[in-house]
Length: 289
Image 1 (cartoon, rainbow, N blue to C red):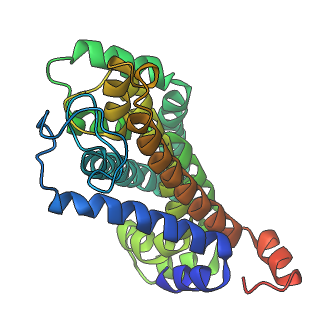
Image 2 (cartoon, helix red, strand yellow):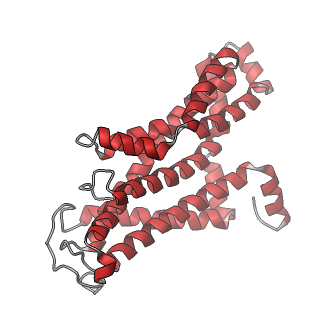
Image 3 (cartoon, rainbow, N blue to C red):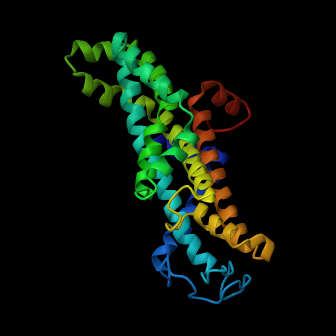
């Protein structure tokens, strides 16, 4: 997997651009550790100050420095996407690999559950969960709920790969040599599906972050926890655009767009690497992959 990522960075321009954008966003998030202000403090600076040398991104109507507030917001938003992606990848890997390898009634039961989750309308469910758990809704709770709802599509994709791997000669050799199911799936099949897992992780992060931003802008999350969506929510509450405080919305939107583009380019480049036809087209055009 590391060799694949190295080759992608060396030969694939989309992967390089995506990696640079994600590095930029991650660097912005890491600056939160050096912030001179606490994330929830208000009126620590003069309100509604446009971008200046002292305040590069301006200040909000709540007396917060947009730059430093955005470092906390993008950090929490990025961590949210990572947590959802990791938890949902564990579910999709376990269900997809087991269903594809076992087949039979195990496959039918797991795929019936999988298809049920695919059919569930996620946004109304999340809004309903918010109203039911309004007092207990937190960043962690929302991430766990979205992880439980966001694994089904990728589990079916991993199952398809597992069905193919099941018929390979090395699988039969492993069975005849006495390898257990766990050893076979983790030691032999998992390395083959890791590129798919990487691509789906990027897509899942885009999905979860986009949904979290949407819910936050509408006020259906913990708005006191600084996130990019939370910043836009408070900007809307203070009618920032009408008041001419455009920087309160512009910079959070710009940063989240850069994050979306970076994750998208990483996913697209990995999908291209997985697809042999795409690699042949790139080789025909003089590329390295």
